[in-house]
Image 1 (cartoon, rainbow, N blue to C red):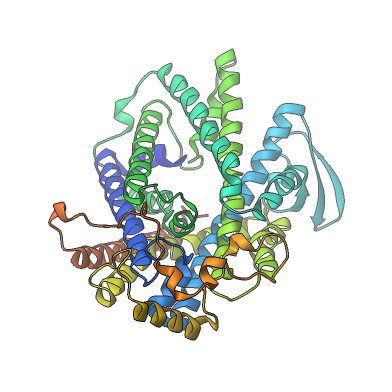
Image 2: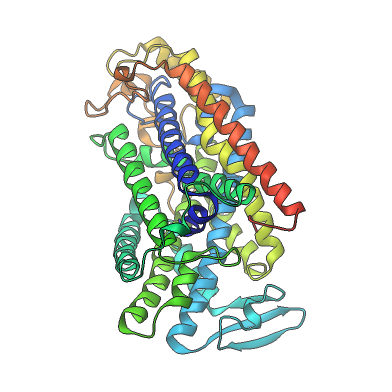
Length: 480
């Protein structure tokens, strides 16, 4: 979201608005399609089986599909997590310097030394050295313990993030309102077509790449929570905030290509007044409140996907989801090369995994189960077949429940509801609604819509990659 103002200025109002609305509609449909595909799995009408993204692919495409899904999902989750760790650690160091005038670190390459840094543009941030800083250590101490919890146990941390975001956004809008509006800074059509369209495709796609997180939320939400209403409401609020924030900031602050992050522009341009001081503090709080709470979520989702696919136990999944990204980031988060690898990995895989794969899964689900099962009408035969199929795929009669595997104990690998006899699987909660990704009132064929969305998002994802490669060849690296 922080790059949206520059996107408006480079790409123009019409292209940015069009792609923002298109991505908003497609990512929301992709989310609900994925949920309906999960619900159509026999015995999973109430989502009691805890199918995650990768294990859902395993049901519809067999074990090879599950392994492929696991690889793709983990690339996206790890890339997001490592990128968040890099930004969070650097912002924390900036915040320490702002508060106390100092931050400290251990310099590893090319020589070993203790560092006392007093300015954000000092050598600790020059991208040529490899440093373990105090900001990194503080972020690590905050995030790693939360990565071992479950999503529902992290709720208060996410509420803190949400309220912090709203409070800081309110302050930003007050700051925007004090500035003169320059509507000519946001033309209807961009004056830099290649750079503008490359940014609009990449930035907007990344900002809506939450689809892979939806299965985990579905598995832990309360039964009476409507999936369709929740997903559409959250997406709608998000797209409104992105548009208003991006456009308002774009007409009040001139961004440069070298400083695409509007938060950096706000910090450097803040007046030496009380409001300017509040704005600087809000910038740091926005980064801390929105980035840091998201890091444990990526770790938890990685664990959930690995455990429910029976690839690892809880101990190994925690190492891979929580310890690995911090270990990789420890020595490289001030070097530019590693950051470029992470960002390009996200560019190549995020669009396909979040927008195209859910459409493919939904298309397969509609072919396998053209009529959704009724909560109380699932036959014993179909349930038994479902268990046999799952046993063939995973070597077990149930899906591991990550919520039953806290800590390092691998002994209780399955939830009781997943290990019970097949007769108990018809004991659905009456509060769980049917997920109709495409309501009948729209008069749109769901399968055709899934095919159309998959084709369009594939074309847009490939276009974004090609344009960024062309720009990189011309000496403009928008990704890194």
